[in-house]
Length: 76
Image (cartoon, rainbow, N blue to C red; front, side):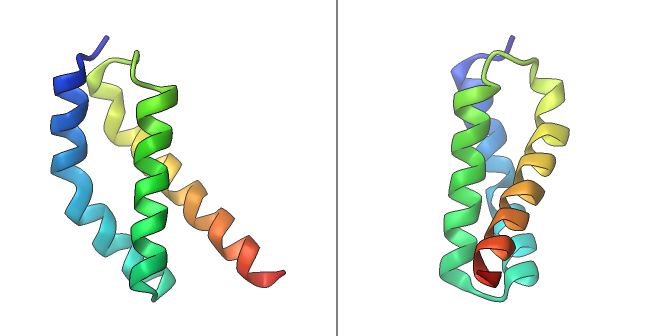
């Protein structure tokens, strides 16, 4: 189980990389910020009790799914 400090440290470490990855994928700065923020909130709310070692894989999957949701909403 990770502490809130470990979660904060992890999110701080991946924030810039996740933003760059998302901007490259969606080609919109503002949407990328929203997507990364949503992914971080989902990780913090639903997976905070998981071990810190699982955060990188969980966060990547959450980020990819959140981007996929964005693309789906853009099609409609």
